[in-house]
Length: 399
Image (cartoon, rainbow, N blue to C red; front, side, top):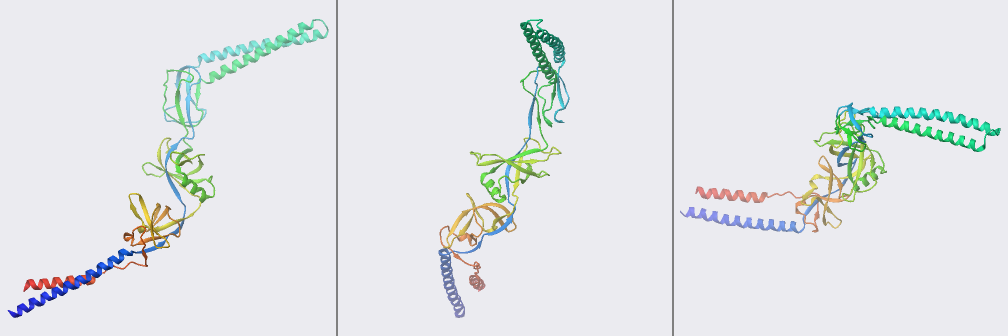
């Protein structure tokens, strides 16, 4: 019995001693944590650099180079159409025919008037020539000669008037055959055959040029200035790509060769335009997608480890560690991923010092301790005490 009591007392003293050791360890651990809170340890790196061809993305819209409304230039009944909606037509190709008989009659009448006026002009030319000879020989009065010259000039003017009327009649007759002013794809026919059309009476159809074709996109003014800086000129011709709304890339690259002469005050963007070949008519006017425009020269770009980037409701950020070891929260804009690193569009400069380890312990504005590496969390001693306590507990239970 005494032996059993001795064993129990030994176990109790052991437990008391174990509890004391655990308390000492916890106190030491708590003091260590408080020390770390007072001066967080962080690992830092300098912002690196990588030369790349920078690219900028913007929403884009496909626009026809020409958009021409085809209208009637004379009045009459629409007699025939020579195309189908959606056809590709060439400049000068006949699209519609307006009933021509009325205008053919007008041409015939005007032609007859020209012949009559020409005959009269020839007659009075001869009369004035005779009068000139007679007045030179004093056979007629000077007043008679002047009358002959006046009549000649009047019939010459009358002849020119009839010629003009004849040309105008022919012009109106030509308008009975409505021709395509430009090459392109024809849209919907708004007036069908059999209807009466009038001058300025509305559009018969619309022609959209499709090859080449334009892609316009609004680029932020800051991005435009950056492109101009990299290329050394705002007017450089740059490669541009177009992606359809479903994400598919258009096979051919275009050339960005135009930009607007002002910044949109509402959006802070400049309208850019790329010209694309469109032999297969895949790009349709009015279609939407996105455009990517590339700089013509490589440019150094800041690069940092992706693990250094944090995010909150305001956006993505990193901690810049200044010369006084004070962390400064700095928001950034990413350009693209590059393996384990991220290329930075804005917010950082090459050579800046940022925190890449121990970031969770940082409080903005509170000084940190810069170390080469963070200490490993090693609780081996605590694990030994825990294991020992569990063994003693099992021993008591068996007794």
